[in-house]
Image (cartoon, rainbow, N blue to C red):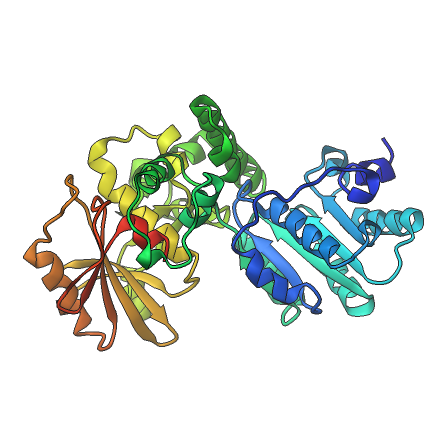
Length: 431
């Protein structure tokens, strides 16, 4: 197959039937940058929907009258490219496209999984600075992308993180109307049923639309293996893949728990440096994330353990021996996943006489304190200490909003206890 034939199968001008499907919420923000000069960057775990979002952008451009011939999509996970992933291939692809398609006017270039191409950032910067071109790129490594973007593309890009579906998006994929005002939405049985599915299988789009549970399980296991091998083991030249896998499963099993690198070092019989490195690699690949301790003092932040959270709960379902007693950790991670879409660098936990699950900081001030409370009944009676802990910590942050998220109050309405806002989980996830 010639280079042009490979390109044709990925592009609409070559007859490819590429549909964006159900549009993601992030698209409303991306619209603002369709015609600006900044390079638009999407990072996130593989299979979370980055490529689909590129297709949806192509749909938007088509609606605006942009011809298919003015758009070039290149997927660098195409097997035909694998022996030649370097900047020379990138130049060859672009030249081949221009010589065969003869695009007129502005070109819209979509570079998918660009981190696979060595020195891609130099080529992208040169094209962006010298041509009438709009560039969109995706990547599955947070640190690799940020390092490269921070060197040659400083001030030339705008970044978006693409995660598995939010609960609001999940409802749409399930055919359930997503409310414009979630706080006014009455509790409905289909919403409750959808929440249970969401907590069990997570939000990877292809998993969500699969009706067969065996297929859901197989997809999640394949995603896990792809992240582990392609985004971690191969990228970082790790030979002991069984050790890496064991560590990943251990961390997913203990989502919403405090993690000690010293304990991991002893448990897996590796050096402390290696334990740190492997955990960093898994975080870079968007498999897990670490929630730091809140303190203005760097020494105190470093001295306290971090909390581990799974990026998607579906992995935990198919890879760990979970049980009903773990529901508290599942709920807490679901709240974290809701918050991480809204807050990029201002999310923490704190323990001042009692642990508060989430501290939300904006700028230099703490805006929200959030506590997750779990129980086995639809109507949970809050224990005095669960409110008193929140009130005590709130004294350290005057003006901060206090929120309690209830796990099983599925049919309950919002409540207010003094100045503490009490929300059922499903409603919190729709805010």
